[in-house]
Length: 220
Image (tube, rainbow, N blue to C red; front, side, top):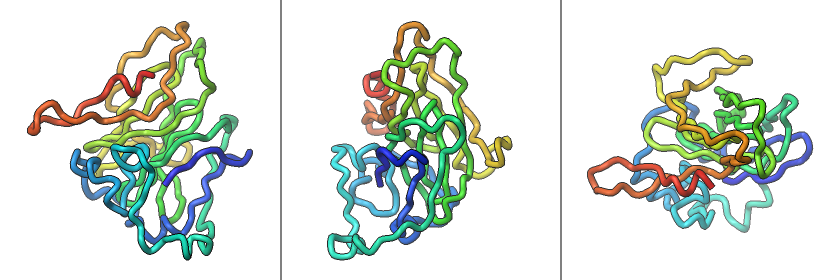
């Protein structure tokens, strides 16, 4: 599932594909390296940018095919709203019936795939003197373990814990916001550096070790 540029209203039009293939919006398990490795072989989740390590964006879906795809109709719509309706270029992730999608000005939303209800949102606090080089868009998040990660306009990377039961949360604008676990150090704001790409997980150095970040991918 991929979202690129939208109309001026900045809405996501979710088709019946989400309602058909996504489970109810509830956290049941964390994301392992094996899950990411097999992302292009499964139909229930979208766990990586490009749907798989090769980023071919090819899905093995069989119930939705070239013969019936023209019968799909919108099931719901979601607006990012507010005064920050700029370019929307993010590819969404889907895990356990929840859509995770980033938006302009370093924001990320968790949305119930069946209903389109906003489960929570998070907006990174940006410095006033920020000078992003390439507009204010964001191209997507990454998910691993019990956290969701995304880059910010001041070249930071944020880890959010918002998809696991029992996580302390706070109310923001009528939705539950995920808790920020950590934020990697930012670059100088006057350097015109920003992080708009989707983060990536690299293969662990040892088979028994955890997956780690590929710094070269998110800092570009």
